[in-house]
Image (cartoon, rainbow, N blue to C red; front, side):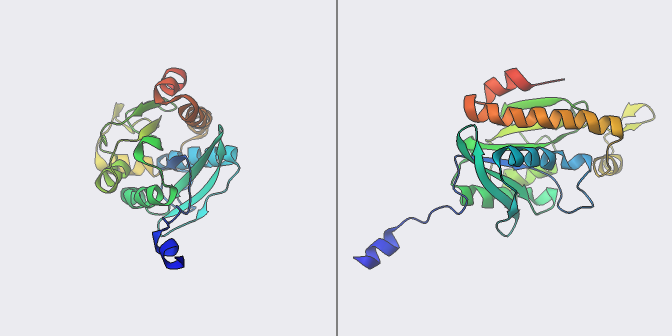
Length: 210
């Protein structure tokens, strides 16, 4: 009887939660203030509101579970670099017991102006390296929050050249730009709470900003 109970018992998720919130970025202090790390900025704000401090919780992520809008929320920051974010998201899905329909991923978006915000369910990867990795290992049917960082300007025109884009996203914003992004970070954290309470459509109607 004891053996049947032991082997028949389903293992409880180590970060059991109702919702999974993942901010994308690159780990380490050298990248902390980069434009590419704005997803981490939002995750930090969400974690603060949920009363948790993400700590190393597996091979590829820092995580913590707290309460937000009356639900248990696992807040995750990958410890992988951006182009391997899928490994952390797949691990977080297993550890939290959540599925993609209750997962929110926050990341930077070059094709939105600095400080813009867009919320939607599902969609493609849009060329974003973090989302490409998540698509390969977990899928893309999650709620996404895109925080606009704009494109680098070269000769007065937005550039899509890989070397210009890489240098731009891995650089820190100037003071005015940073202030605009911080205001959007707070709005994005508000949007996470609205998604949990009312769904992605309501969050988009209330929090999308140009």
